[in-house]
Image 1: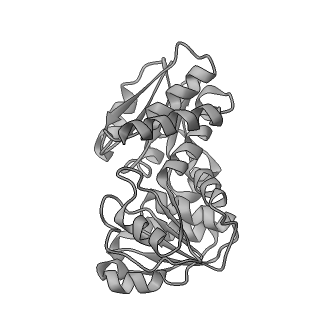
Image 2: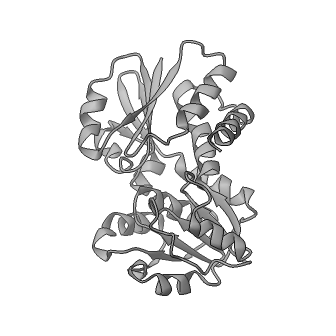
Length: 273
């Protein structure tokens, strides 16, 4: 059987390390996992060209919304968040699901956050939508979302309405000083921004748990500054692990072997230096 991770850019992805480690631990010797560069416009064609030997796909930026358009069945969680990071092919049907929400919750709890008064989410893409669902699940309702363009928040606002939260959304990211001021005093900050977009930001302090979904290179300047200020910082590596455990179960029908997957991930990160 075959599976793969798709996205753009994708060269840095460590998903193959995690899934291949799971297959070894589960003794699925005839399973393979690849990575493919794919933009939104190419997803439908890629999926249409897959044969019956494909079990599923992991999807990262920028494919989490368009994944719903190529699916024939959608899980309730993917539907309510408006984004899917997983496509599973079962009995000739394309099933979309979202393991990002559980991944974010598991990561935040592992960092010592199990609910708080105020959260700040940076960005408005598919991962930000999952972050809203995760925060709602953890009982946080005072949420601020910072973006660069209010004109690109329609999908996020729709997700917020579906899950029953009313975040305050602003374009504070156009001004790093203004955005940094919003971060001060937050119980949890989740940055879903790509690349270097969060680098100028400051403000996360000793009472804050910061999750920066970037994991390569690490630490980001944003995460390093927060750690220096006393924040508890976690990277997208833990989210990657946690959500991959769920994907393995969806694709293979067997529980993801998290111990072996974590060991393989740690080794891969160490090898990258």
